[in-house]
Amino acid sequence: MARTPRLSSKFVFITGGVVSSLGKGVTIASLGILLKLRGLKVNVIKLDPYLNVDPGTMSPYQHGEVYVTDDGAETDLDLGHYERFLDISTSRLSNATTGQIYDAVIRRERAGDYLGATVQVIPHITDEIKRRISELARAEKNTDIVLVEVGGTVGDIESLPFLEAIRQFALDVGRRNSVFVHLTLLPWVGKAGELKTKPTQHSVMRLREIGIQPDILVCRNDQGIPKDARAKIGLFCNVRPEDVIDARDMDSVYEVPLEYERQRLADNVLDKLGLKARSKDLEPLERLVETIRGLKGEVEVAVCGKYVRLADAYKSISEALYHAGFELGRKVRIRWVDSEKVTAENAAETFAGVGGILIPGGFGERGIEGKIQAARHAREQGIPFFGICLGMQVLVIEYARHVCGLKNANSSEFSARLRHPVVDLMQDQRGVKVKGATMRLGAWPCVLKTGSRAHKAYRKEVIQERHRHRYEVNNRYRDALAAGGLILSGLSPDEHLVEMVEVGGHPWYVGCQFHPELKSRVMRPHPLFRDFVRACMRQA
Image (cartoon, rainbow, N blue to C red; front, side, top):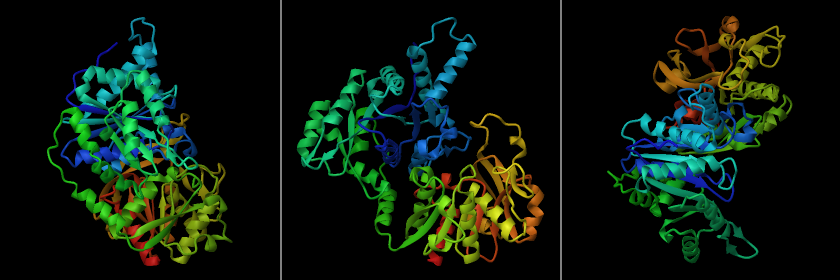
């Protein structure tokens, strides 16, 4: 069994119990920003217990959105929380799954690296998990604290190797260099008029059975925790009452850090790690919350997609819209529109009263004709429009059909036999059989056309944005589209790929092949979302 190498960083492990979807990602991000505002350098890793290598081939209804990093990793959406709160760029080192762990171990076994030993969960799988945590800690010099989120719920079979690994890790680095935070649920039983602590007690008991004693409990609830309940939790879970954090529901996730600050969460963590804050400047956070609470007026934006029954499928889209609204002093309200239900006959009714229409990324033919009708309605009615990834391809298809006269123009993704495949499979994607991690992924440069809306938004000529796609505008149709008035406002440096398009003489009608929402930050909104929301405000 390998011991963890000597590391200069300290570690905070966050686990979840009782039920899933309690908000571990928001809790980590909130703690992270409080530590960062104290002058500490923070890094984050998410450990996911599922057997998939990554979420790249999973349905959004199973997993939510796929968050893509600069270096091209398809990762968990919680990395979006980390980046938006902490204003950092994560990497493929920031997410490890059971699939990745087992794949690495099996490859070593096939190569003979274990010298004939029987390969087992302990120590081989747990050693690989520990190695991933150590690798992230060593990746950036002078990292003070590494926040480690263990996905899943305590008690699940899938998460047991990860829990054992972090138990060993804490033992290796020493308890003065590690803290365990456990996030649980305190359900309110209305008929009894009582907040129930028993599920939390049982969750902590399961952790203690495998050798992990939580140092801090973060308790989600919607009522607030009475003093006697806090004392009871502390007594039965073997923690101090002041280490029982009241994580009541907030109006905005961006208010959570200040609520945790009020309860000294970051200070408690630092005390247990034997660290002192180098500074403490909470003014940016306080200013942000004051801005959010002081928003006056609303602007409604329609997001037209096929996964709208699960808002997490477009998590970064919605957050990027909210960020833009914060800067512009307006609350953004999202009208979720199922693209399968949009037709030429009902488009006017469906989008009545909205300030703008946004079509996000996606895959597959389902709902495409509805998206095309949405793009056409926005163009003809002068409604601000923003097409992202597939949304840009829809923009091009609609424009080719109804402005350039290319009847039945479409994408070859949806039909093998097309007279006008204005969107086509990228050349280097032809012959690709494996679906996972084979798309055009990660950050790529784009050169913007001087004087375009894109250039005015970014205020620079060359940008770097994150991609996740296989299809692009077909170069054979570039001249026809340009002749019809479509502005090719962003190209790859070699001018081979169309990265941005827009329509002149329109309030705001822009498409981009990349995913700008992935680079929006709560205190630094993305320029394209900012300008789009500003145009929506004028429309409204």
